[in-house]
Image (cartoon, rainbow, N blue to C red; front, top):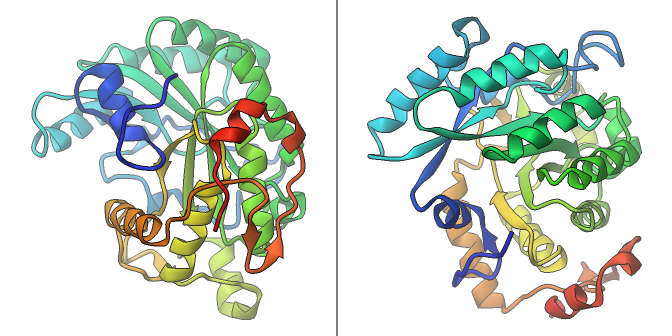
Length: 336
């Protein structure tokens, strides 16, 4: 995967898609009717304390509707906005590899049989994939575009325990390496601002994650949404939470871009839950608006990237950087 040519000082994922497919490609969210091992009792119950799938599922995205109908309704919605585009079926809700292989096969193939669908994005957890499922996905990836998107959320095991993830960062490392060995594209997801995280630990975690063989990184700020265990915790003990202002988060993301591997594609930086779900923080900004402002900040400040920069005056200590190839190190610039 070669970086796209861009005036931006990072690899822009939408531009990569346009270069790869020759046209605009839209992800269509699908609810495949799956669950998670920290919901069904295998590793716990209640799910992640921050998670309410209703807060990010589109209105058409309902498992009871079936795969083909969801895709059809999604295509109809986006056809009103964009003419002549292709789609990636995005299995988004819960853990979309957490089922018997035959069930996964049926649902993935049904999605690929829909008109204008050119590939799959499969969101899942690091502890919800098996070797036989990865082998099957590897075969699919030789037929069409496929990306497995792992919700890593944090590289801090104590933080992962606090939010009831039910897996460790070591499990994420293992899953990512097994997936990469099969030649499958990999995305990874981090949440910034989880209880117990510091600015330094979040930045270190982003670097550790990008030192693994991922191609795509998705970021977003912690949001407290209604209908979650975290919302109840926040209302009882708001002092436990460190919710960043928009300006603080913007500055932090600029630092992250400067420190991570330069060939990683950045897909998203912020998320905005619907108003009826969102308790805090209420920034009222969409991802494209954040991107525009972030690019201005990077140009104004002249901050590039580089390992060994400083975070609020403290020397950043990052483990595992000895494994990074010298050629990649040279491409990174130091933070001024």
